[in-house]
Length: 118
Length: 289
Image (cartoon, rainbow over all chains, first blue to last red):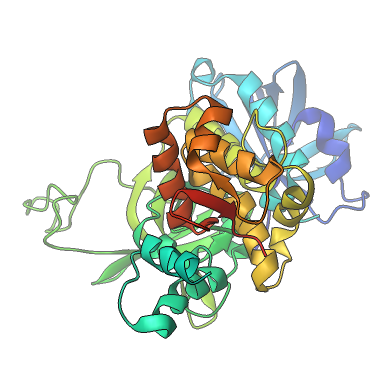
């Protein structure tokens, strides 16, 4: 079976941490780039924020909606963040209804048989 | 009984070939409830996830693929393009939607009108259609599930780029809704009662046994019917009756429907092989046992 990358919300990150029992540690998350600090960045996902550890060739742009594929990992300053493996630019955040994304994530985790292996 | 049997044959339009030939048609329906109609009448384009495509089953070799025990003749899905490999006769994409990864082959048809701007030499003679998928960009794929050796792939009719993320989300929700439709039944309709519900629920695991199949056929075929046919079927299933079944006029009275509507619904159910005519062509019973 090929690699699965579950879509998640910031509140779910702890469940995909390497210390947890799940076999999925690589996740997809959608957010708006709200801070860029060299090798780290912050995306805003609805009401929450997630810290990203960038790779040298990640080209995030401030204020853009991005979909991040990355590995859930511990941050140096404590807490959980995502080490970016890939990113997709979706342009203007106003073009996406984040509420729909939240519903999509909920649906995908309720209907495991068609989305993700246990 | 003789007359009932010949009515039964006639209603299938089976005709000739005598007893043996006539008996074959209903038998065939029994063994492959969705096989025959899937090939020719099922033009349904089903939204799925790639995991569903990989999990799709074939009831027997060379049969059409089934997802949630329902024929999935044509499918569509959205994912990210992980690899594009252009060959002289086809383009192969590797598509990943987060639930899995599958290869998509699109045959290059030089005479196709779909690849509109073929005319150009400025592009080095390469066809450059609009909405061409890009590497690592999202694409929507329309096609049919195929396999070559042990490898499953999708024969694509169309692969186009997706530029609005809402389209991705809608697709995932659509796939979820259709999955629920086939596993839990239509929205706003009480779950099939009693035995019907049980066999419809177990359809996934049910062997190809005749009786089980018919139960499953009832639960599964209903979604593809007109609402009137569904009402007639439900009445036939729930109404107390002798083994002669119910007369069309009685059904019309019970459902307060005009006779032509009931007759049409009856034809539909007869064609689907879920009811059969008993003492005369207007008296139907559920084909269950």
